[in-house]
Length: 184
Image 1 (spheres, rainbow, N blue to C red):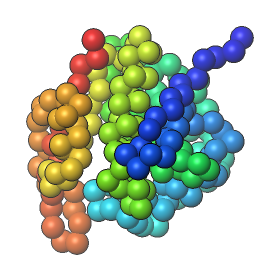
Image 2 (image 1 turned 90 degrees about the horizontal axis):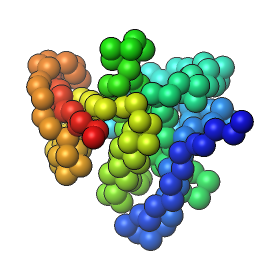
Image 3 (image 1 turned 180 degrees about the vertical axis):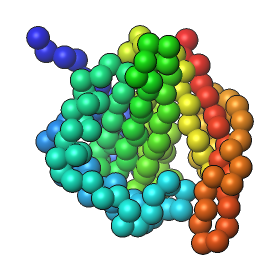
C-alpha cells in the first residue's frame, strides 16, 4: 500500500519555485546541516549556534516517527537543491489531545523577506486540514518578533496568552506570546 505524502509546489516572490514536502529519512543529513546552520542566524529560535546536536540516527528516527504518526509532520521547503525553510509540528500522543499540537518554523537568513515563512506555514495548515485529525494548531513567538507575529495574525492565528520571561538571551529576559488557530 502506498501512503500519499504531502507535497506542494509554490511560487516565491522572486519568481523561484518552492517545493514544500514531508521530510524523508534520506534527507536527514541535509536537514541536520540546515537546522544547525539556522541556529546561529537568529535569536528568535529556541536554540542557538552550536546547540543543535543530533546524530544522523536520531534525526532518521525523528523523521520516521513523523511519517508513521498521523498527527505529526516535518515539512521541508526546497529551492532547487537547497533547504530554505522547515516547519515541525508535534501533536499530543493521547486521545484527548491527539487533535492539537505546536509548531516551529525556520527560514534561512539569506532567504528572509521572500514569503517562505508564510508559504511553509500555509502548507502546514493545508497538511493539518488534510489530516482530518488536527483541529487546533498552537505556537509560541517571542514578543519582539514583529515580522513573525504579523504573519501569524495574517494567517488567522489568535493571541491566546503570554508566558513571561521565557527566553533569556545575553542577560535579558523576553516574553513569549501564545497563538492558536482552530482548523475547521
